[in-house]
Length: 296
Picture: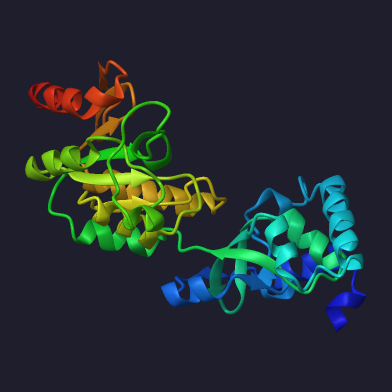
């Protein structure tokens, strides 16, 4: 294969040039995500927006060398075609893309090491992150101009060590393993009745449809789900998303573990309403505070 005759730097430069201006993320079917658990490194492509691909920052050669050493050791031990190898490392997170292949979201250094060591395949997790067209579709379905925003990872996901969580009976607890903060379904219904849209955000690489199914299971209706907010995207795309939301909503209620914050579009003003921090009282306290924010 011609790719194997190139140096890694040459291959990286060629990949970035080849897909510059033509790379578009697309959603994968649930069947595809469940069936495809490993990919050839040559089916994966570097993210041009990631620091790994930027000349002024670039790959960490030491990290690549460490992974390459591990891979070559496994190759020598004849583990590369066994499930043992695929269980040794976290899957690379990828997103299907046009015109072909998969865009790497997390795992660039392992991908580079695999190319250098001629590893035939790597474990992957295919995700569907929220795209601009998804946000436009969500907003088109909205008839409200007030919204509530919550962080999925820090607020809605429950830490059993910190207090009670919503119950998930068997066998659904085997499907939906992440516990939900106690009271969130009731809080969602409370905002639904009062004419608020609910948007949840995650910096992690969760599939948008996976989170939607998890919320639906708990009877928590939300209007918008934005995942992968920490991923590198063009600044113009990020600003376009923010502008869409800002233009649609006149008022936003941000809810944290210990705080309710009200802001209004087009102004710099805000009001803070503290919470006690008691997980068992979290949703009830917010329901008591919201009428006060509406008066304000």
